[in-house]
Image (tube, rainbow, N blue to C red; front, side):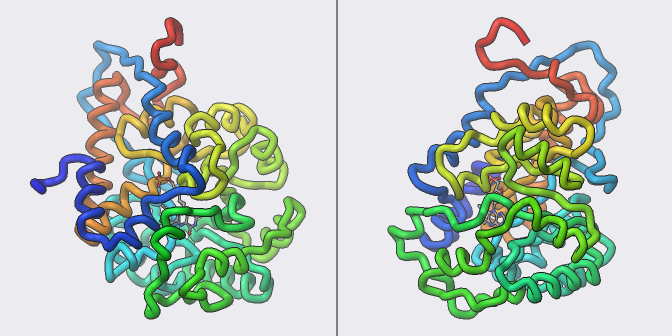
Length: 357
Ligand SMILES: Cc1cc2nc3c(=O)[nH]c(=O)nc-3n(C[C@H](O)[C@H](O)[C@H](O)COP(=O)(O)O)c2cc1C
């Protein structure tokens, strides 16, 4: 293929380079993959309302997330097993993200420890995503490592009491390579049946009350990832979350839940000013990011788009995807009549086909 010019081109190259098992693991969703498809399709149901004759000579995609400056309103979502995409895995991704001037969120299911990742990108902001295991002592020790390695926020994934049923993996009998380390897990992953092994590393009995323990074990700002309703947004605010990620785990957990973009407005309304709202799921274009901002997100997280870059061309590929998104966001801001992400408002979008805003 000729030089990739958009995220879809990077996915095409990644698909050609990856073995069918890892490709299915990255691309797939749960059940009938309705939510997986809905995440992407939802962006097409919103249209942009540009304003003209605005001075857009100077435009910047930069913003802040939980007080940290980022060069674009796109963070990198926690995704497991990045070594399946590229032999250098998470450190390669982290270098690409640091060069792009934004934040990477390290998954608990990584091939490196928090300290090893931090050493790959000294001085760059990092977030840690926690799968909270049944072994509290282990979790406490892991959190101490996260703080010691100077991570700046803790992202607790709350939509994973058990792994979703991903039929592509089942059909291909996908297994992990034997030499894939997972140093942040309390148990070795059973190679043959890692989905059910993952079920065992997450404590399915956790409730809102347990957040108190978490906040006493780790003082970092808490981000709850996987909230889809106004009810849970209110509870998140009451329990002291600093941010929420509106997310359905990229369509990999409960199939049949709404597209993240469609759940965003009710969460934003409920969260009010108390909590920063981020969103992930289906972001493939700069204009997708602009629509999420218009509907109240402070920034988005990107899962598969950057993974496709990593799988297509390693660190350079991930960096190119982030550069591409930034270019598309800056171009989109100009054409929308805005000079910065925080100038994008609800008035910049309307439902497709609707006669009014
Ligand atoms: C291959 C893969 C692995 C993932 N692993 C994790 C994980 O370890 N922890 C987590 O909180 N979310 C995980 N997610 C979900 C992402 O953080 C994110 O919510 C999702 O990918 C966003 O959708 P997108 O891929 O359409 O951008 C994973 C997603 C994918 C595609």
